[in-house]
Image (cartoon, rainbow over all chains, first blue to last red; front, side):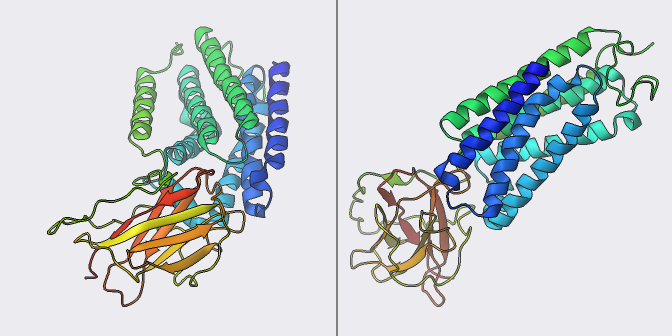
Length: 202
Length: 180
């Protein structure tokens, strides 16, 4: 699993290098630069997330928080770059790619909230994991899909790396969901604790 | 006895959500509602209007006003490599000479807010702006064309249309409705 997390991190570095080398960002404003670079890191972090749920989820929780902050910074930077275009993109008349981004953003907020409220919700472990995991999978598909459809800093090889990272994330979601749901005895295999022994059954 | 499977309601809700998102994406316009590819290699020749013909007025499309600033200066050179042109007519399909048309787009020279000009239509009702090639702006190259003049006998209209970065010609025709 460390290998796959490492691969995701390497993919993130590749995205950053490709974006910075792209002519699209030659004369870019600081806001556009911030929005592109935060997105690159967020994609790599999303690809790593499912693989970080194998043992204790401390890293998964921290990375989840980082992703929420990165995506928030990405959206705020776009609003600063061009409020007209950002609000148009987030409207129901926006292009398909922007609608994907909008859904991904809302779902990411839901997935993050599910993580924060895990204990308060008192859902059964399989139910919580299924909802959190499947919605997170949607975030990966829609978020990375929007990055692929968008023209700009990550065309060409950038698209290849985006596809690879999206694939890594989606495969991770499926593999981990199947694994935790198949294990059946949810309580015995509940690795979803931030601190071992902190609660009865997560 | 702890539950070992996800609650059926949760599974149903997620499946329903996926279906709704798929439907919403399927029903969206690739480049935004009402935006179409206007890039071309040669301007289409519109047939002369038959007497009594009517033309549907151009409707402002969503995003048409993005980054619009009133009163762009007249005939500012915007570079070369891309020609933005179009025929401006009234709802009786008659060409309108001497009508102010504003064009703005992002190129290597500047953003949509900086890179703009106003031109007048010629005696045949055509406007023409020569610009540097369009560049990707918010995920896709796009060009804006508008008629918005205080005291104009025609109603204001704003357009946002998309094209490819290597297009050398963009054709955006306007049919202006009388000002109400």
